[in-house]
Image (cartoon, rainbow, N blue to C red; front, side, top):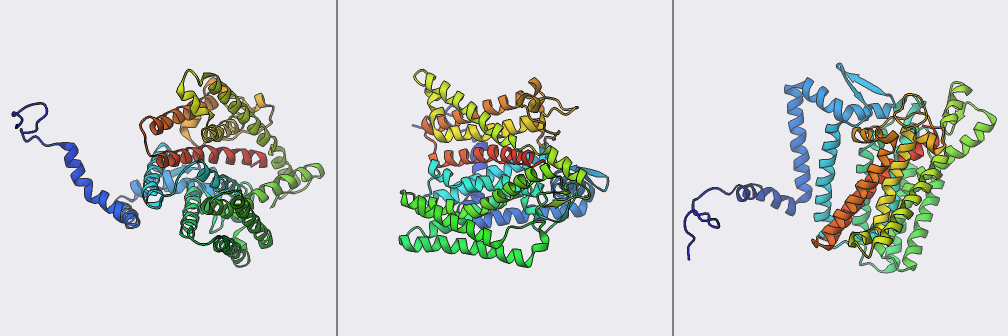
Length: 471
């Protein structure tokens, strides 16, 4: 029976439905994205580039200086040259993020996650579970460690700790570009591992070994052809040894029942992560030796006089690595203990007995404690006294993220680790409720958790390593 005109459930009045109209307008775009994701992103980037070029031609001061330079390229350039600020046409840019740049990078991250989820994981049936995330840990560590190497002037052609003449690779290792580079490596390795999934076991091992050989050969080419673009590089033989360690890890994980995809991802990530780990270890080791005997160099940097080198050595605080680890473990024990006691009364408490969720908390507590110690140093003029409380003698550092800086001003700095803990606890509850109660796709939930893990461990590990090296 027809609905009477003007009834609540009917639409006989002919009034437009804005939701339906919007879906109709966006359907061609969504279909194009679903069918041709690569062309979609290429078209989107080309369109944005065209808009920026047109805007730069029509309004150069507003688009180039006030927008691109101030919020995006300026911070990257100052970071690459390791200076506090730089000016272009009277517009100053610093190494810190701005609210606008953080918003733009957040939107890019969200869009990339959705596209990767739809076109990489769902179409190929790749599960984003705890085992998959564990296989990505070498890449999670690579980003912040490589970023710390940029802070240590590794990618400069000529450098001190106060200035850098950046080499051609320097800009690839600055946030957030370094995380895009890491994501590109992960996607490449994931596609290669997935493509070789149906081969025999011996052929799969050959694929893994061959790709590790390609990595070592590429490094050797850069070492011999572009050595002048770096202050220091490890010997190609060292990198070849790291590749052998990666193959050993692959064989070990496979022998214990691991899948080819997970084992290959972990093995291929070993050389990437091993290079900065070796360099960090060499810096700290040489620093401890030089502090005892006195010298005009620290690690791979040579200074004009011994006093400059000793000032860097005095800043180096390797103890922050152990302190951060112990405090993080203490928080995990506290959270897990409370969850165990409350599990029978609140079902959400059980979420915090899941190892992956505890890993998310650990990642953000690494960031919380490292930042609390470094930013809240005992130096005069800082807003809090985290380093003094922890018994660490750390020079003052500055915070790049404006939101974090606000919380560092609360409760003599304790507001920041408290905020980080409450935030990640809330995220775990919301995400796991979406999975178990609203029955959201567990792979999408896993991808969100992976992003949360990276956003916590990335800046936290970089901060801790920088302080440990005295940078």
